[in-house]
Image (cartoon, rainbow, N blue to C red; front, side):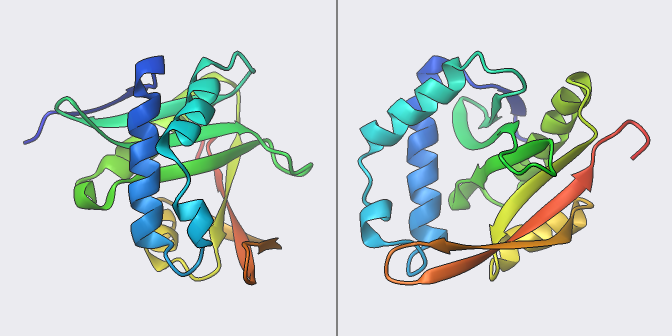
Length: 172
């Protein structure tokens, strides 16, 4: 069994989080996201992640999945901008070469424990309408679409996203 864990992100993780994000986006979202998004400089994304990691905003979290000393995935959550939702997962990514090893499930389980500690009872996450890997994972984890959808302008075309939700209360 590999040495695996989940922990809160540290400032020194920001660059690796950016690398995981870009590697995952380039493989999973090529043709969906515009080339300029996929070519975002790593240093630019690292600065965004450093800001999120160092944020003192209540209920804002960045967790990382580790396999031995390698950062292989991450989950970010914060209060939702949607008025009818309390907490939103803004990112849940595992670098494809580390996929199917349980890292996503460990990230989600650790996040739920943090959310419960914060008094949260539910969470939402937006997915692309046609994103079978993530939606299959969410279904297996007990999440379901809640009927909300939105259209995002991703450059050359508009793309539809669907909102998923789950109950994270102690009774769930």
